[in-house]
Image (cartoon, rainbow, N blue to C red; front, side, top):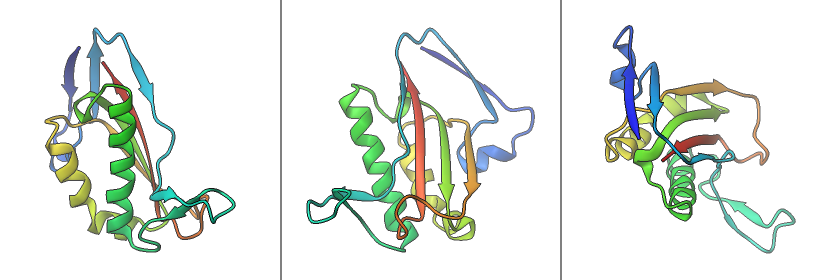
Length: 137
C-alpha cells in the first residue's frame, strides 16, 4: 500500500495529521464503529461500563486501546489507519489532552486525515469522547 500526503498548507502537521492522503494499492479496508471508553460489565443493562467517567484523558486512552484491539483482530496496526473522526462533548478538554492521541499515532509513523466535532452528548452520559477509525492494507 502506498500513501501520499497532501498538504496545501502545513498547519495540520503540528497536530499529527495530513490535510489529505492518497492511498494506492490497498486490498482490504476496515471501518471501525465509534469507540468510546467502555469495558464489559454484566451488571449493566447495556453490558458495558464507562472507564474514567467524566475524565477526558483516561477516556481518550481507553478509546484508542479499543481501536488497537480492533486493528489487531483485523491483522492490522496503527500504521494502517487512513482516517479518524473524533466526537467530543468538550472540545477544550479534548485539545488539552490531544497529546495522548499525538503520542499514540506517532508510534505508527503516519498522519491520517482527521476531523474533530463537538457534540451535545454520547450514548452514555459519562462518555466524553468517541473515535471512529478507518484502516486499509
